[in-house]
Image (cartoon, rainbow, N blue to C red; front, side, top):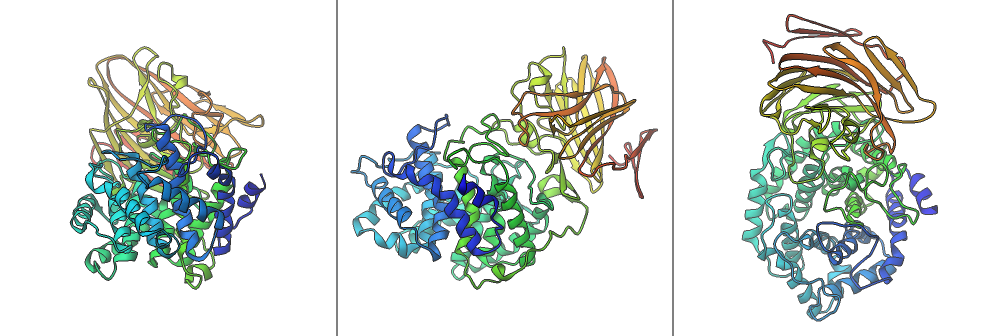
Length: 605
């Protein structure tokens, strides 16, 4: 509990702050290094797609993402001893604690990257302390990665980092393999600093805390030897920073979007890698503000168990939202953000004053990320179209909601037999017989316009929907043009809010509002809906709130063509003006204060 308080009181501005935070995060782990086999940590129970032994190896190696940078300027005798002993045993094929021969697509190949980064950053304090025979064991265990098939994704950087580390340690490395891997990564480049990660419809945090992060480490060590590629890495990182910063709001919260959200404060790892690479993509004070506010925001959340260990979940412990590759040690990937500890004391970042994040535009289209993002006081909202990652859990919720808010979060499903199970906030859900609901998954076509987003999708082969979402500040209008050759029950869902005793529900003739401690969630009918009520989903489905509620309206659609229009609000400020919406002759007119949007749905969409 004391360590948790130290983290909550940390300002995350000075190097000493980050040093203290790293020590506070590691202290609860210390008893586990001597409680079991060498080179392993058993931090809890719970299944994953890999074996229990590999889960424990992962838990042992992942903290190296923070320990490596920490050891650049500091010593931690206990941890150093535990890790040298564990690495020695884990890479010795004659040891009973050997980490073993690896296979294609092996999780141990992932964890090799943290060990490689340790040797890149702290060769004298780690690699050089092993005997020649031990170094050869480490080399042989790591270089297995060159013999295996791995996904053509951010995983390629694990192989790149391993080879780069062995080169740095004076060992043979596969230069041709590294070149080919970098060329594959380069083939995933979209433009404006953005990549996709293996899947052309996946642009999530893996672009920031994986592809750019590892690229910047490569840049740091290969600037002289590979000037053409590293110049490109620098240019793309600077470009990426200009739009990626819109994923962070004024209070430090990042968009709850995509998979691997259990890695939590790794969301700001890209910014720490920029500092490490000495690339001033934004003013140092602005970068510092993003990192500091983000880290403070996370430390105020319920992300630790009673022992002080990081948990699986997001704003609170939650296995429901986890991926199949989330084991008890997985959340320690978040320590990648501690790369800052490898930055010299004299670097201007440490001297800079934190400044607010600067948004040149209140609303920005980022077509490379397939998003339109709006910014307002203490909240950013992302309107996403055309994204999907098919291989992971809850992909409809994590990639295909109509809007993602840094204030209201998103919900995942506990089931889809009944609507209550689904966590269908911020989306349209449909069923045939009031059971087995489904929401938008893939899209046939999409369009990111500077003023709106268009989705064309099919929940069934004989039901086609064109959805147009038009943001205006913290509000947005949703228009669903539906052609259905079967009866459809449609339910529109607004933003989720936490449930508390002092909340207030306000029912209007054409809508409903719910006032909560975080803000007000509103849903109004413009055309086609009825029965506005508050929906209480299953607990632990929202990523922010363990008990949540959100407004819904429904429509019962016989075979034919229909147009459903709603006004949806997620407001942080109280008593905000409600936009006026007019729909006539296929034209939408939205007025909000002095702002007016007029969109002809026939001519422009």
